[in-house]
Amino acid sequence: MNHPCECFPLGDSALLLCFGDRISPKINLIVHTAAKQLLELAYPEIIEMVPAYTTLTIYYDPCRIQSATPYEALKEKMLNTLKILKVDDTSAGNHVEIPVCYESDFAPDLERVAKHCRLSPEEVIDRHTSATYDVYFLGFTPGFPYLGGMDKKLTTPRLDHPRLTIPAGSVGIAGEQTGIYPLSTPGGWQLIGHTPIPLVDFSNDSPTLLKPGDRIKFTAISFKEHQEMEAQR
Amino acid sequence: MSLIIKQPGMLTTLQDLGRYGLRNLGFSTAGAMDTLAARVTNLILGNPENAPVLEFTLTGPTLEFHKPTIICLSGGSAEATVGNHFVAPNCVTPIKAGQTLKISGLKTGCRGYLGVKNGFQALEVLGSCSTHLAAGIGGLSGRALKENDRLGFNSCSAKKGFRPDIAVGREFTQYLENQADSQPVRFIRGPQASWFSRQSLHHFYSQSYSVHPDSDRMGYRLCGQKIESSYSENLITEGTTTGSIQVPPDGQPIILMSDCQPTGGYPKIGNIISADLPRVAQLKPSDTVTFQEVSVREAQRELIEQRINLNRLAIAAEHYWNHNQDEY
Image (tube, rainbow over all chains, first blue to last red; front, side, top):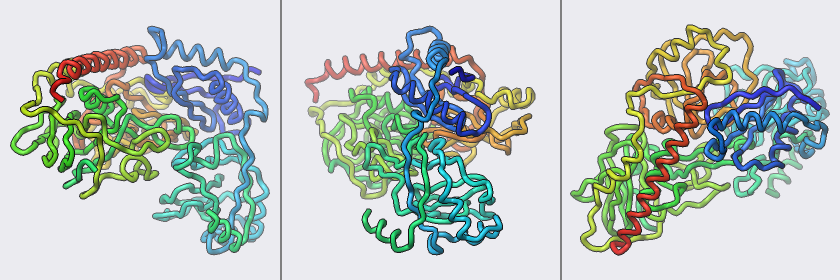
């Protein structure tokens, strides 16, 4: 199928392919399909690719392109290659279940989120665990997933005063987004739970639990199960 | 163990040319800020250009060597001594076991590079030895060097009486004649350049900006005439690259550098060309800088030219090492 695709230079060693102008699972799937197709072709001039909501950034080495105008040559090649994209679910990644303990020790902001959304804490957990989330892309820190698909009813603004440190594994809500902190960093998200599963492992060649294009579900676990899983790490 | 850090200097880290292939997982590339100086250091020593080097900031380290080696200093011009002898930049200088190399403040530039023959030994993490400060990986335990840290390298000794050859240094650097520091830094128009008013673009092209003290390996914050944007929408977060010039709502541009995140939500007015990025890496707080727009074609031509010159330097260095192999 034909999908609109625009191309812009991002400096002299990267280009930006743009597939749309709004955040949607459909457009993001086109981005991952394009990335997959280009990865399979393994063009030697391409160093790496970064998908985002609506764009695919291609980092390349202009010295490896035999042309007086390397950008124009690669742009043409990209647009030709991506003229026809077979977009279906096969481009999506793995389904990953992430166990989350929503009990009070790990959920300092759950009451506040519940109050803001006019729900009970149990209803917040219910809605948070019943959705399937798309990993639109990873960014901000290694392994940090930008997720789509949160129940709009759970929308809660960020904290007025960000915390100086948020423990790695914290699950939170910020505006219409939900996410997990892979590393301990400062942040203003409303924390509603914690996962005992590590999201990054720097000793692994594939260092992040999640990949762009994956789909995830949160499953509620008890404090005791959380302790046991953490002990097994 | 081959050397001990007696004084660490400011933000001294082990860096190679960066960690590639993981930006899609949210990793910054890290790596030397002035990639040209890091390459030059290694090529002069006859090392692979990607060998780990020490990058220091404004003030250099003091190092006590316990094994003989040959060093090369490049980047910002440092006052460096071994005993009573000055160490000339872009030269090969032999060091004996027991000698101390003292690198004091930089006279020009912001970052200096120290390489040793055969490169520093560092554990490769995810395909690179570069120190990734945010993740705490690479280099030495993923952090800046501290007093009493130890670094290793394979020793290499020079024959008695061998002196560094200054002429050789000059021969090497003739391949690196770059634009003078006073010349504007060149950029290519960014994907959101049209979001800015004509007047704002004009300001960016014609005003000089000063470097804010909060600049670091993630980004250079610039202070100057506010850049007004005429857009009302927010940018949907998209890919960035080293050299991207982001303009946040306060209108003060930020140039993204080696430790930058691979994605960002601020509009990009432009991108510094790769050939000039090493010059940006040498700007220090309160330095001033001006910008000049060039085409993608010109930027790529400049980059290719720079690579050709690095190849020439590599050939000259190889010739030097072959010619002098009896000395080592």
